[in-house]
Length: 388
Image 1 (cartoon, rainbow, N blue to C red):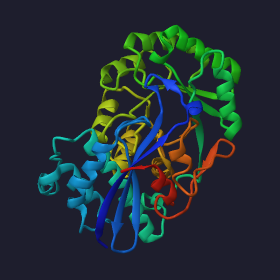
Image 2 (cartoon, rainbow, N blue to C red):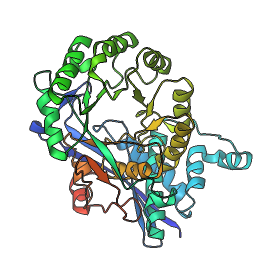
Image 3 (spheres, one colour):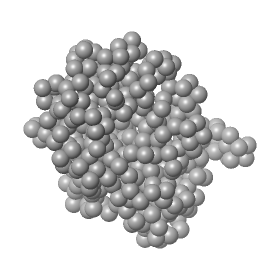
Image 4 (cartoon, one colour):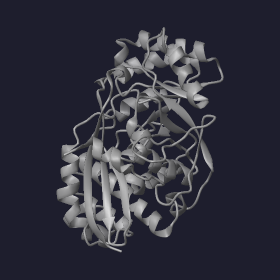
């Protein structure tokens, strides 16, 4: 089997004004992603997702150009089933022969950012091809399922203290969730407001619903510590991205000062950044985003690192049906994933891009047995929302 073509398509969905939300990222008016297609001469096409930002709104021209003009010439004519070798070819560029002969990396200068995002989308598509060619779900190729289903937490939570309880209760009613995540941090203006919102959420939900909070890296170290002290009695499941992702030492300082588990990693690239989080003792839960950090191939490596250090992996799944499917396949196959993110924001890429969107019942997601990533792309959706 040979690769005959590689395509990248920027999809942009304008969010209706009444469904928009405001956070530290401002008002989100579009949902964007890059759909990656890897075409083969065997009649199989694999699909993946690449992102230019961890969030949902961004200009995708650059990552599209990188996939089309830098990686397509490298991949056409190659066997798509040689996934690890192709990953190394893309990561190491013209020095890939050194990497494979000497057993260590010789990465191109763009070893972070858009280069790795582009590799991520291609890597997902290659795993999709391999699974389809063997008529097996990707999790089977990663060693088989550790579990048949996983609990999910409803991810959203932007309302003020007066409305946050009702907003989160609405999430619970939609899917029977036993866990929810809300946003805190600079969007609230100050630490006291964030703490008040969390306390209002706990009072509204009672003691039996797990609550996660996500600061999007917007607190300073001292603010994060103050916040953790103020919500100590709220029994939080985790405190996500408390400080700037570039301040790993600061994140470690926050973790050392509280017994609230610290989650982070959604904006990190490759196993090397996650290695640093681990060695600096900055996290309890690692959150790789498979659409930016290197795809399924690299996420498996991160999960092994995490397992060796007794850490949990909870993939960051704020994206399309393809990112969700890739994270679900990973979660099925690794022993140290215990819960999954399910977006309750307005997310047409999650619910309309695929003919069979993910379903939550009783707060749990059943792992599908369809070949590859298990996603059938809705071509009409792609044609309607593609940016040419």
